[in-house]
Image 1 (cartoon, rainbow, N blue to C red):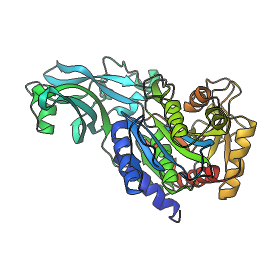
Image 2: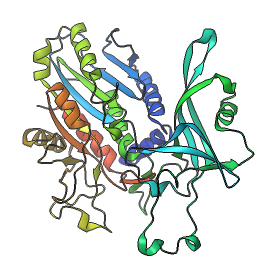
Image 3: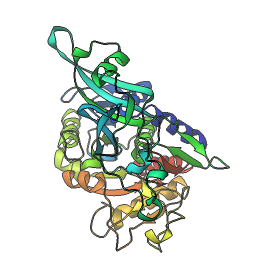
Length: 422
């Protein structure tokens, strides 16, 4: 890994821009794996030394030595989804001679950040193919087809004192044109150059069209959508493409959809999908199930809150977190994170090996703590885990901020965690 930290940050920006939805993120990851000689397989199929299986917005990839019996796992975990606005099944709305789309809020989106933005549409559709077979196709409309205008201050004089108050049903429907324009299904069909009658259903969402970029006077910041948690997905993918696994140990990265809504879905972190795939790796590579899980651990990658300079009082005073300060170990006494003294110490040692600094995060005692896939995945597998991530500001905004040196430092620490001593 000889690239500079800025080069890695720029590649992250390209990765994010190619991934406006979890489905596009998986397509981008698959393309990168293919270029690194990974082989796509199916559940229950072959388990090549460098392989992966993808389903919906989730993927499991692995790297192992085929000449030794498999006796353990080193796991990286992250999630592909981000809070956003999703298009309803019957989205057409006409009001005040304006055509709009009905949308719903996915996850804990910071909804005020979606106002007055150029918005495109991405996701997937299910269409009727030849011989009445169902086909799934990716959709990416990368032009400003939708916008949610904010109410003018002249019509909301109390906004400075009462604050901005948005009703998710009434105030978030984007405008897409004049009332005499075509309905959404027809517009979508025209964009895709197919017959509207062939479109059956969709999983579609809005996305910000402003490209990701480095910023600050010294390019030491990243401004981008979906930093939470595509930054971690990018790190996990690049690490797995470069890693040499320990003898008799499979290096595995599992990137899940639906973390932002609880992970309790077919291919979410709360499902049995990862365990089934790990069992299949064991069956095909001479492993013993109980022993392998006893010799397994997970590095759960998800971003952490940097200390906001304008809201310092919202943070634990003794645990300030800084952009470009290195990976953050996330800890919580109520097990909202999976980190414990032993697993945190192992990651600290990995940071020392990689020659990168680390930080330790805890929430204020009087504020509720978030969570991630670490406790979910480690509980399902009954394995040790540690929750870590890069620091960022404006988490769950349509456009978030991170440090441009942090992604490469997290990459180097994760690589050392996979290859170093337990």
